[in-house]
Length: 406
Length: 70
Image (cartoon, rainbow over all chains, first blue to last red; front, side, top):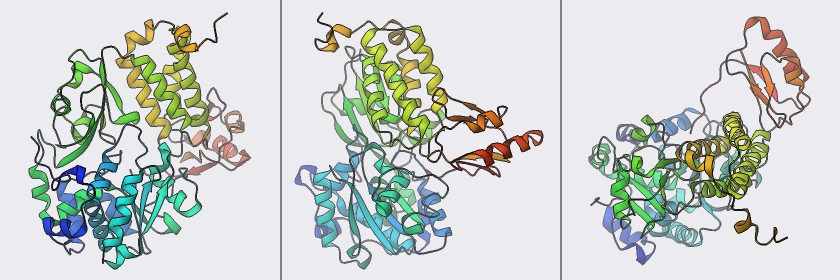
């Protein structure tokens, strides 16, 4: 059993932990100078928003640029299957705010902005309540801003665009937000789970952080288990825990299940049997060409259809394009259409060939990585569900809802 | 040097692919796919023409790209 860290303390069903209870349990936010960045580097902490980028490197590059930086606490959890950021904000808001405060002090930030999905009602209420409890001047001045309920709203340049221009669409880079973000100030956009880890590393040190973790992984990770499992939800695991162990924590899973989606909609389908021994750790997954992404582990059962599920998710991702870049807007729509045709009307070689070619074509051709994520997701589906994609039957009658009654 | 593109500005007019077909082809929706390698010296003038002709100023010639932060 994992020793809980982020989710340690009172039972999660009790709601947000109040400031006095948080301070009693963990002590006050430590005061550290620039040495915190060295600690973060030694800990090996990587970002938990999806890109797994080293936290210390991000902080250093914000510190390198001139001007009073802005810290954006990123609680816009746009991934439909992911719940872990919401659970963290709803139950341990002060852990997140400690991390924000440490970032603001270390980087000498002029402003802290707490950016939370507009549809995350509980999480927003918990963060608002927690902000009101804080005596720290940096947090008393902080703004709580609602992020639109869109898949791309949590992308760092989309967050900056929303804060500056009220449009949650990604922007062209350069400049990256760490060079010139909110109001052209260097801007740290950091996921809430990453900030919560920062607050514990600042208290207990890098070695303590690394004392959790298995098979070479460092620290703990929040994972959302979704799909065909007995008890879906959020679990805290030691980095390096295998998929099998995580699925056991979610109540055990039918061993005949078809596949596992690792990393959410920008993630990768892996054959169920092959996924069992995968270690859920950003570095270990990267070595195998996979990614932890936002920490979703989704199971598709033996009765589920990988083609239909892939078609549904591609349709969603196409609809979530911010419609700024042609290859993403037109390309994802075409990919979703071709996928949908195979799902509804049965396999055909032309659409299959198009899927392979277009998935290659759209990669790397957007202002953000939305087309890349969708294309990699699709490519993994084409590989994992290759037999289904080439032999998929027509569901036309079943799905058409009477349109073909004649 | 390499050809840089602002994907948000690009409108898929396609002039670039006509002026520098060795470096730029169009995808099925008319948007440019730019060869990943640096522009070879003997094609630099083609690249310059393509950059200058873009009606929405989406293209640029620049030194090797920096890696974006996550």
